[in-house]
Every structure is written in C-alpha cells, then in structure tokens.
Length: 238
Image 1 (cartoon, rainbow, N blue to C red):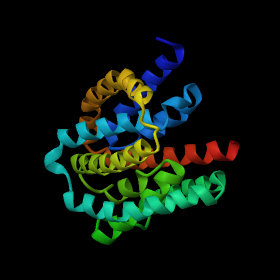
Image 2 (image 1 turned 90 degrees about the horizontal axis):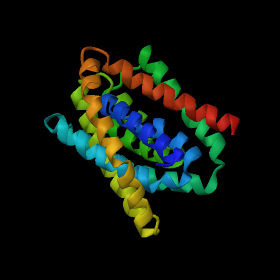
Image 3 (image 1 turned 90 degrees about the vertical axis):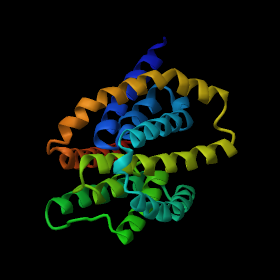
Image 4 (image 1 turned 45 degrees about the vertical axis):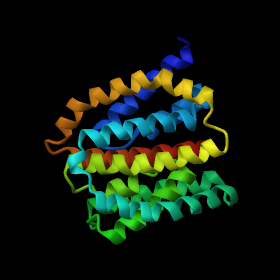
C-alpha cells in the first residue's frame, strides 16, 4: 500500500467516524487532505464512499428519518445546486467560499444566542437551497440542514441528514457519470478505501451513543464551526 493510500485510508476512517456519530462532517475531514495526497480521489471516489455511508447511516436508524423534512430539503436542493453551478462558473471561488464560511459561523453564533431554528417546511426548503448552493460552490452543504435540526434527537439528525446526503450524492454521481468522471479507476479507488469507511462507520456506534447522552447539539455546532473555519482559512491563505 502506497504512502498516499495509507493517509487516504486513515482520513476516510476518521471522516466516517465523525459523520456516523454527528450526522455529517466526512467531507470536512477528508476532502482537504485527499486534495493534497491524491487529487484523483476527488470528487467521484469520495462521493461514492459518501453515498454508501449514507445508505448505512439511514438504514441503521431508519425508523427515525424525518421523511417530510427530507422531501422539503430536496425541493430546495435542486434549484440550489443549479445556482451553485452558476456561481462556480461566474464568481471567484476564494472570496465566495470565505463568505460562505462567515455565514455559517454567524448562524452558529446566532443559534447560541437569539436564533432558535426549527425544521419547518419553509425553513427546510430554504435550507436545502442554501445547502445546494454551499455544497456545490464551497463543498460544505451539510451545515444549513444540520443547524435546523440541532434541537432534535440524535437518531433523527443522523438518519435525516443521511437521506439528504444520499439523494444529493446520487444526483452528483449521476452528473459526474454523464460527464465521464465515474470510470473504472474511480470505482477501483472507492473499492480500495471502502473497508476503511466501513470500519469507521462501525467505530462510530459507541461515539454516537455517547453523543446521544446530551452532546449531540454540541457536536452539530462544533462540526459546523470547524468546517466554516477550515473553509475560511484555506481560501484566505490560498
């Protein structure tokens, strides 16, 4: 196993633990490091692994999925993704990514003080749209939905986000497949890293049980804050 593959395997394992326990965060952990050690692992192999992880997470806590909420998020996700594609094609990515990071941090701070978000149909549709924009143009599509569910129980947060990510990942994989980016090489790379993702998902079980004792909201806000901070630093330095 090459040096780059060892690092990629460890990163995927850690990302799978984080997402399996907190509901999201695998891209936060994996994408920046994979981009350095082996850019070929992005985006198709990581998206394929994320889709499998989402299937496992949604199945594990399937009785807690907020199906209505998933539907409303997808209503917003589709136009949000189109807007995100337009932004990628027309706006400088560094400054826009910094703005996204600042917005996410501001939402975290507001939710700790005066803002009490709830997953209402209108909020979820808007969150899905914002998530589609942020995810497409700045790689962090999870925080807008996670913040809306921050006061819900852990199983509801994880399973609902899993379905949201699954549908979003499938859309992205389909688009990449049409563009010829999901080829045999991408499939083999994803297959090589799959055992480490599966191990990380298994290891997330005790972590999620701990978070469900009263730490789930803290985990949601922490992952959102770290993802926003990493995005700001990466693009400010870059």
